[in-house]
Image 1: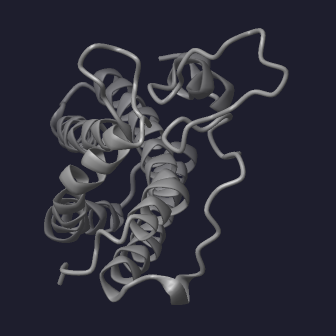
Image 2: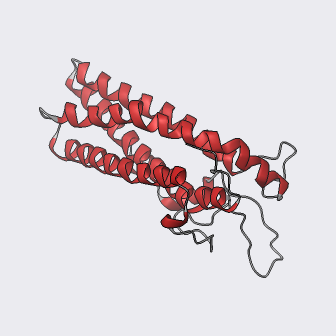
Length: 216
């Protein structure tokens, strides 16, 4: 796999971003909906909500994002080390730590977020913050799709790494390992972008509409 095809630059993410929508070219000032950010990590002016203003339920979700970011960084570092130095003893445990965290912590985290999505979607539809298609999708549909894709992507990377360790042919093993690493790096970037959107768009909206009052 070429480096160009496997490492999708942020500008490509912007072009193919499912959060994008069409805007009137005649508008002098481009407007964005809260679930439709411009360049991936450069959202427009948003609701400024300090951590202290959030209800405990949202604070916990934010805290869990920070913990998972550390896991992502460790996972990414391991992948880059393997890519540079080859697979060595001890890397199995470092990789397993990420997959264990995903299975035991991140999936639970995602389910807690999904408990908020129906309420938030209703508010977004009522306020007109949705797609112009007949089925009227909103930011929550994109976030739920991200959650599903994360499960699929983690499974792909996990299985590729496992296959690479079992293949007897060295050339095939190295090719599979290279594919696993590249897919892993894309996975890390997708997770980071997803968390960024939740921190800067979804959670402020949940706060704005006061949807976490009865959440534990």
